[in-house]
Image 1 (cartoon, rainbow, N blue to C red):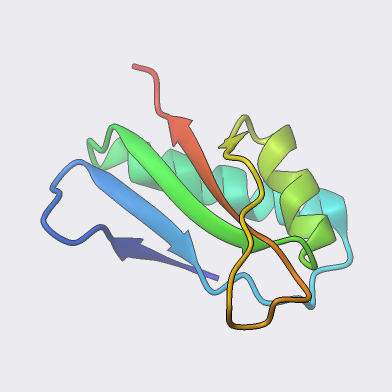
Image 2: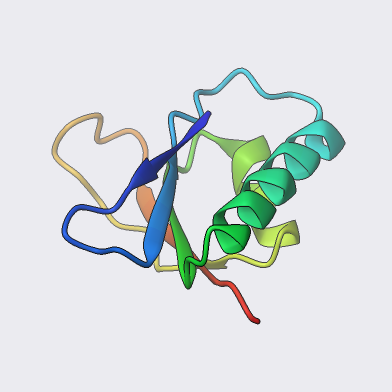
Length: 92
């Protein structure tokens, strides 16, 4: 998992490369919270993440960390899972 820039946007970041290997919900929440604090400290306004329906622990962790999920979307690649976009506004 790492932080990446949003192309052509200087006040938003993305958390990417979640993988599917997270099994410890509390540790995952701690890692996401730490990343959000870093992103906020750098002066960014929001964080974006994308997950699939197969990333159960990550989806729970994002919700517990205050992210809001879009509707689940179908996709042509790997149609056995759905895709969602998560956003979190970093309040001042």
